[in-house]
Image (cartoon, rainbow, N blue to C red; front, side):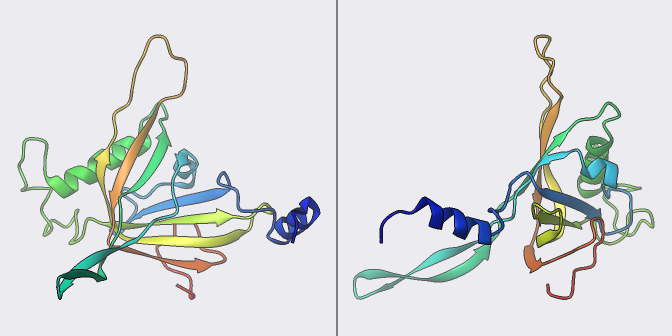
Amino acid sequence: MGFSATTFKSNLSKAGGGARPALYKVGINYSQGSSFTLTSDESILVKAAALPATNIAPLAVNYAGRAYKWQGFRTYDLWNVTVINDESFSIRNKMMEWMRYLGGELDGDRGGLYGDPSNSSGGTWFDGEATVTQLGTDGTPKQTYKLYNLWPTELGEIAVDWSSDALEEYTIGFCYDYWSEGTGSNTQGSTSAPPNY
């Protein structure tokens, strides 16, 4: 069968014109309440994110002088987001505070408020959840990914430069245990998964 631009355009049209990387929304929720949960105004400042990846590592099994590959553990890479910094540093301050809850105070003290799971202000768990929703060109949710047991592990630097008039940006790297996916709608900012997760 020869190439046909008309057939290609017709098939692409049936697929909604293809998914667009700029049409998405992100929600990051802290499991112990709203302390580090991003508000709807803050979520808009998440300039870039990613639909999460997963890997199954090959496990080599040796037999009769040859190595055969078997299925190993499933692993999940860091999930990175890029944030536009506002003048109040609202998201960055939340992430720094969240990391203090995880790692204790800056001087290493793990008693008191930070790093003490028995403290009523901290709770037992210091992780959260995140959702990434792919939107269609009509603005409706098409696919939603939810990341579980999530916490910030890397907070990127912010470059300052006299010769630049660009907006400040930085990255946040999150660890998480696993993700699930589903089609359709999931309320941004909600930690409850839709029924088809």
